[in-house]
Structures are given as C-alpha cells and as structure tokens.
Length: 123
Image 1 (spheres, helix red, strand yellow):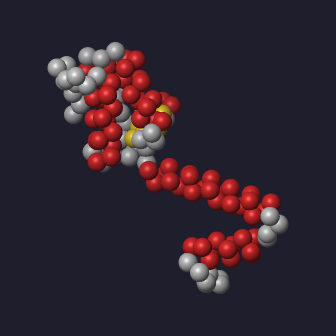
Image 2 (cartoon, rainbow, N blue to C red):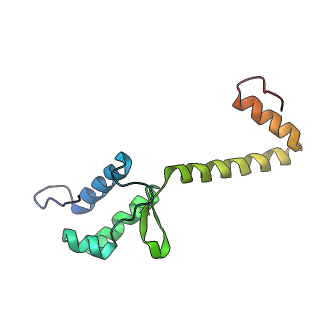
Image 3 (cartoon, rainbow, N blue to C red):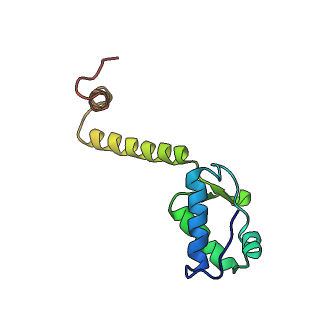
C-alpha cells in the first residue's frame, strides 16, 4: 500500500520513490509484477501525473523497474539484469583476448584459471 503524508516535510516525490524502492527491494512487489499506470497511481495518491512519471523514470534508471511497452512498467528481475551484464562482460573479454591474439583454447584456459582460483581443471 502506498500513501503520501501531506504533513511530512519530505516531498511527495521522495516519499513515493522511497516506498516503491523499499517494496521492490523487500520483494513485496515481485519481479515481473506490474506497477499501476502513471495516471492511475497519480489519481489514487492525489499527485500530478508528472510526479509519478518522474518517480518511475528514477526507478528505471536505478534498474528497479523496466518499461515494457504495452505491459506498462514492471518490477525488474535482478537475475535478468545480472545475466545481461555478465554477457556484456564476456563479450568485452572475448574482444580483448582476441585483440591480444589469443585463441579460444587459451582464452578459456585463462578464464577457468581465474574462476577456479589458480590451477584450472582441464576439460
């Protein structure tokens, strides 16, 4: 449940951002769950739609939500984000070792060595 305390010295924008962030991090709002539309939440809380839109943009920049086109704004799956980052890091690694002239076998050996801390098991 979200609510804005009009008597609070904290601006409504910050109150809403803090509440949604806490709910997402605690898992109260599960990955993949849809947030209310900007207009619906603004009407429910008595806020300007631009205020809610600003909150959603900030949450998206923090990686907590994603805009999913017609599905609206949904809570991000941290596993998906981590996998995407790991894939990019892998691409960067492959690009670098290729530029250094190493082949796939040597690049894989080095990767295993780092993953397994010292001597890499041969496979």
